[in-house]
Image (tube, rainbow over all chains, first blue to last red; front, side, top):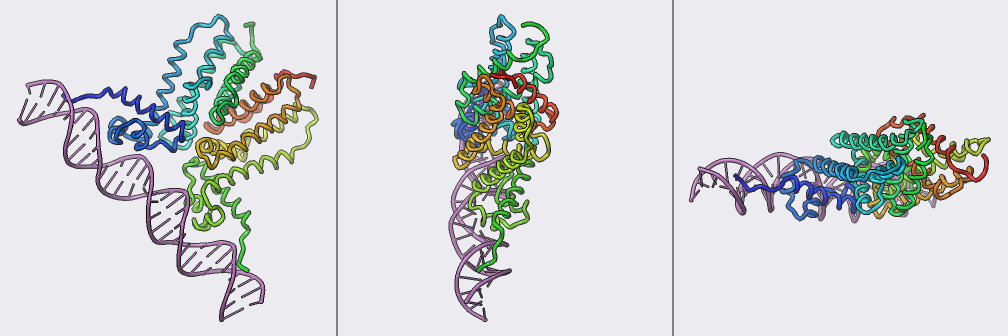
Length: 193
Length: 193
DNA sequence: GGCGTTCTAGCACGGTCGTGCTACTGTCGT
DNA sequence: ACGACAGTAGCACGACCGTGCTAGAACGCC
């Protein structure tokens, strides 16, 4: 019976090292060697739990999805549909440091996933999950044209996120909140909310 | 008196080779060697007109800005402010092949510019130029809250663009058009339009 | 202690990269 | 023809990369 590490904990530790590198240097800064160094491990140790770099990146991205899901599960029920929708969508806007760092990883990742066959499926899954999330938030508001509202809202959220990632503070978190709420308030709906 | 090439034409030819590579392989696919091969030149010839890779990338990006500006200058005046604003903003949405390819380059470039000190200034200039453009289009509509409308609309346009780049056809061009027009029609304004 | 297994550590290979640098070619003016 | 210059071509270096592979260390069980 050999010594065992907690492989899941190790993978998460390495994922977080990757996030830090992505935030500082973009995805180009991520190599097995650089991640190992950032995590205080030898490259062989990293490669023990991730056979390929693509696997490492895919895992790092999937952990972000988990964290978003955890935050969503921990949301208090909101009394009004509009407040509930806002609360949900705010979990995928970079309104604080944690979400900002997640957004940086998301942004770097989707750019790579577009052209890397090994990451494409994961990128599309993330896109689908986000689109579904936006759809569910909007369903609370019963928009008159659900498809249009979905494309509109999803683009708005990702556009705000992109801008905040590219130039932190522009827009500021308060501005993002105002834009989102204002947008949702103005959506044409089929019943009073 | 030595032989002379048309340096500007050569630079543009090389920029277009870079665009093709970016569309296929992302910015990672762009090296002096790969661009030279794509352009049918020797690497030395590429390096004769671009001293560094960053210079090549910055130029390739600036040419896109020129093309957008040319399209804007060629726009027919629209009779109604809403139509005029739509026409302007559609020039920066990937509604046809040409604009889609430009958007792919833009997307790849801004992701790199975030973390590459040599490209940051150019990335920020592009951001500023687009933001100004959106601001001017909105000014035609006299929004009640100009700043909010600007952040809202600019995010929407870039979000639509991002989505179309990441997953071509999702949203489809017609959907983008509808989303944009619907959005502009719903903007609160200070006077009738 | 021996064994089996996991985990750590690191060498090595082939590959690509950006960039410094040099030599040669092609052209035009004198 | 010669000279000057722009342009072409390519070698080379140091750097880093992903990944294959091996050896040794650590650990628990018998």
